[in-house]
Length: 209
Image (tube, rainbow, N blue to C red):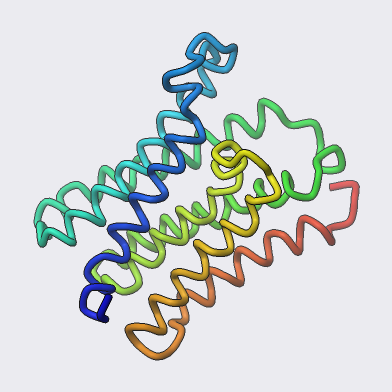
């Protein structure tokens, strides 16, 4: 694939991959086991539908750009932002409802709580810089990457594969930067710093929070 094709297809394929992984991960909720308890709990229903809505919106928006439907992409952009905001609010709802204290959570669960903050920041900045495509699309990609832990855990047959696949998805964004610009963009590095910092704080934070 030459550079022109890579530029044309990367975000389209990346976003579709994220959507497919999400559908695979929550296939039981959507199709195969719809009578499970979480499917009758309003907070999980709302949260799940909004998260799926974000994945659909991300894939749709990326592919509208690939198809050069910029006007429709922009008209739908505000709706995508509202879905992202809904993800933040519904996640807080779930976090508060199941909260048992910082000390009671494993490190990876703590990290997931912190990654929701980075998701919220990335969504806000992506919308703020919507007139700057290079920043806008990378921030939307990072927002999607920040929410992958529970999705990959559900989609993969072994949780030991979660981190390697997650890192591979992150690495693909770095490859995209290098292939196009021969350098790593600041926003890409900032996303990695935010991702890594969430884990560092989760592991190193003193108990009693």
